[in-house]
Image (cartoon, one colour):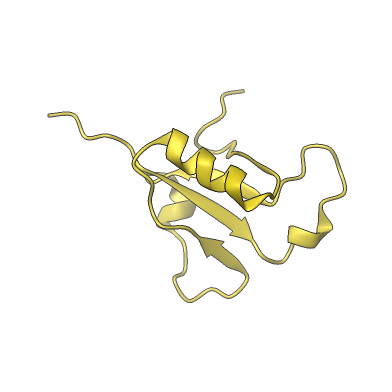
Amino acid sequence: MIQEMAYVVFEDLMTTNLIVHPGDVSLKIHREDCGRYKARKPDATTVKWSDLFGTLAEAEEFARATGKTWAKAKCCLRRS
């Protein structure tokens, strides 16, 4: 049986008010197997991770509903 990938939304609380360049975003969507998500510190006060979403569409809907700028993370979802 193939396991579906889960997704999570990351917010950097330190830079949320510093969005000044095109492409700057408040939120980034990561895959649950992303190294940045795996290495997260649960007690961090400068970042916030959402609960896991079962599909990418659900994570995108959550990010969109915040009204903040968002993108798919380069490290695990965007191909160069």
